[in-house]
Amino acid sequence: MRLAFVALLLLISHLGFSQESINWIKIEDLEAAQAKEPRKVIIDLYTNWCHWCHKMDANTFQNPGIASYVNEHFYAVRFNAEQKDTILFKGQKFGFVAQGRKGYNELAAVLAKGRLSYPTIIYLDEELNLIQPVPGYMDAKAFEQVITYLGEDHHKEQEFEQYKINYNGNIHKSGKE
Image (cartoon, rainbow, N blue to C red):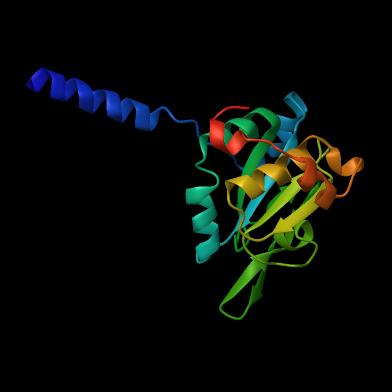
């Protein structure tokens, strides 16, 4: 009986840790990764104090289907918009701009087109050119629609509202594509 209980605990812990998670990379490593294998990029623009950023981390980014899709189609970067370190990106230096007791990194402002709100997911193409910043919390279903729309270049063919009407994906439910 005791052996069966231990075996059950091991099985449960294995299942809990075997779920796929997003392979986040540092923004400093992005250009080298792109040189080896070009992919589109998502940048999770967040702050430490942002409630909705934490909620998106816990609910959306932890979804196994979302994680699998992101890992297969994108490089994923988490970027603290209030980061004080100077960042070198595409040959330009971006520093911290103090504003009152806080501030922001210039790269965050450039990527978000000057509209700093959190969370914002930034989408870049394979050459690190801005496709679109998408502000606001999204659950897994809403996020799936956006990552497939922008990630598979549907934005080049149709408006997002039309895409949503016709989209019937279930990546967020399956844990797989």
